[in-house]
Length: 196
Image 1 (cartoon, rainbow, N blue to C red):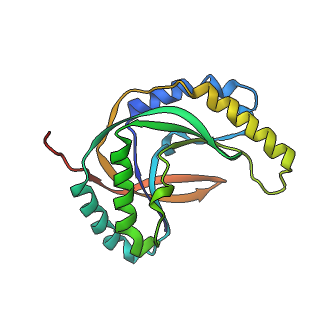
Image 2 (cartoon, rainbow, N blue to C red):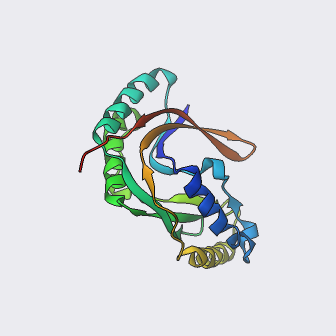
Image 3 (cartoon, rainbow, N blue to C red):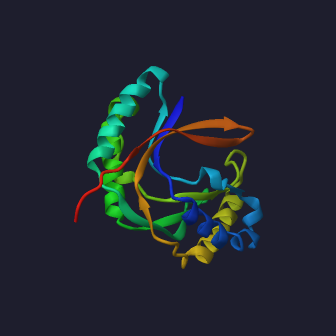
């Protein structure tokens, strides 16, 4: 099964982002993007790829240990940007250093199952939309897509959502269906509670 590890923002934070994104979806070029479903919005900490079902208990034990020693922390969805001419994303603010530490701990704990990960490649974000498939896409069309993504990202750069607490670690399953990925949480663990 295809697995990844994520933090899931609460419904209130997602609804606030939905409200902010709604007018952006009407801007020029937005109709050429594949917008991700709100139900699938998450912050990926580590992509594990194909994992045999018999390794899930071992993976679960490793992730439970990570959650037990990494504290819950405040975050907010904020700003926007793009990855090349392919992805429009919403950013994250708050104790991002704690989220980065959690991602590094997850990468270390899952390396035996998923392979070594480059901890410095972690860029906390929530994917909002993707440009069309690059197969057969001409360079001029790719440049146009990049310009459109720039405009959409600029429209969201001032966005600051409500504060929320990253309080759980989720082992997620990804399934392809009708061209879109569907995600479901296989298991979750509460992050540690530390006294100030």
